[in-house]
Image (cartoon, rainbow, N blue to C red; front, top):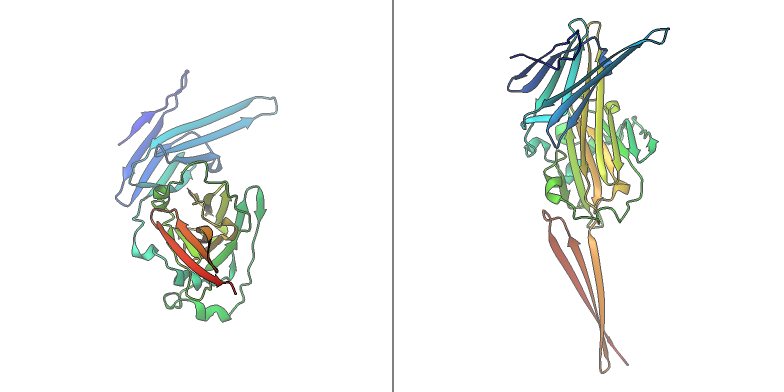
Length: 332
């Protein structure tokens, strides 16, 4: 199937031939273009419209002030079963052909992606991860990769002869309590996001009942140095880009995913770990406590009733715990 589109006005007309194929495991777009360089292409996914926009711009100038400018702007509607966040492209300069490949969406409820607190508690902090951004601040975190005593903390499923990669990042910041109060947080949208969020109770060796928010993304095609994690206005953003080059081919793979974090998320202690192709993100999940105290006196007795409620606003975890304590004091 081929279609000629985007004819420019004037005596010379450029024909951009495109071919689209759905091969059952990937979605491919082949677009014949003008003479561009590979780094002049920009691919932008629009999730609300489920479209992929391709832009390219090339400018040549001479010493007399003249110039030649070429621009390309294409919009491709993408089917709903295709994952817009995972796309790769290559450009064949000889054929002047841009090839874009997109992956199929996978179920977010597969057993291999489900995680529990025991798995997270055994994470080994060894190799350096790329970078963590918060607002306009930029920092790089390094960890000692010579710790040989941590091998016993690796789960049995990970302790084999194959090479395992674990990396960690910690962000330190102050959570603004006003964020999330302007409008109700959409917990339904959050729990259906690609991050596969789970809210788990603390581990048995914790002295507190603090909960944890766990999220994970499959980034098998990337290395730790390709990944960038950032938080801006309670929005968690994950970007990744990988470039490869041979004598005859150049390719660039990019990834983008974001989600709004619940207001109960303690982003000051949010951590990110890269484990065998998966980016695992965890943060304390704070409950809202309401404490009331009532005092009543009867004859020589004073009764103090202290009541504390722990309220969970997430409808997926919705419950209220009430602890009531009575103290009776007798006057002598």
